[in-house]
Length: 264
Image 1 (cartoon, rainbow, N blue to C red):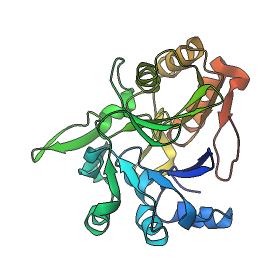
Image 2 (tube, rainbow, N blue to C red):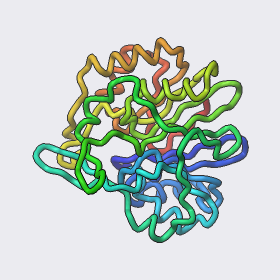
Image 3 (cartoon, one colour):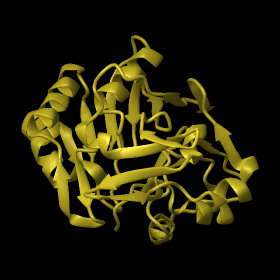
């Protein structure tokens, strides 16, 4: 395990790698789970941070066919402010240099495979408080990250949508409301991913900064009000976030962990 996220999504006979985890952990775990990486049909980068793209270079080396879908801004430098330090947390620039033909940039709602869609995120709600500790570069200047490099994924199956996010830096309300705008009138059955309610301090996965409890409860009640049937979360939601969300969503909340397999 590691402080990153990588999901294998199967639908309609196709397989999608959603994010590539931290360093080589996703590739090693895929092999341990018997996942045939050369046969993956498409890859998606949720946003341009190293704990979601660390294994992407290795994936591209073993898979010769899968296009990689991402926002163009995901290639820009990105930084996190932790305590009094600023650290580079962007994806490996060598990926774009070595495999430019494999990268496919998303500009609007895009169907990458039958029933599998990607879309930008519109901010109708405030972003999570912990997402305000990040920096992007625009025109050579360091500015607060506006999260233009994050996208959402929606899978349509059995008459319902499953909405998938990496870290949810834009906020899960913004992500789900953007999915509702992109697919008006369609039922959202499940939401999967990290919601950024905790943030490691100084590289430690034990010492974390936590979002205010009221913020986590508000997001949970909002999801409840949307009629979402199931929520699977982990990664940057953290133990704390999972516990608070479960107090609202009860048994509709499932926890992500390495090796978990489930259907929605």
